[in-house]
Length: 77
Image (cartoon, rainbow, N blue to C red):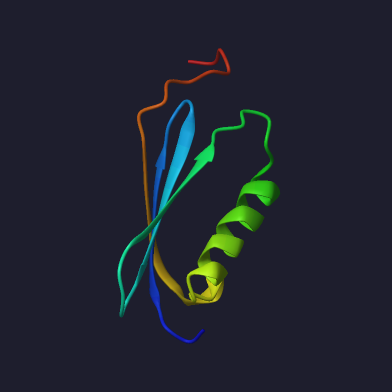
């Protein structure tokens, strides 16, 4: 697991789409349910496991691209 790559996330109300794009390889796509009470630690562990599954060490991720059009749900504006 020495290759580098990119991590792509699309955060939605019902799912989080994750794409892992190794520098040498093809895009692998995953879909996780959006869990409004999940912690950042829990999501981080899931993302790290997906990276490892695709042969990309989490520390070898060169860049993240995150998109979201989810409206604020906390009531604060």
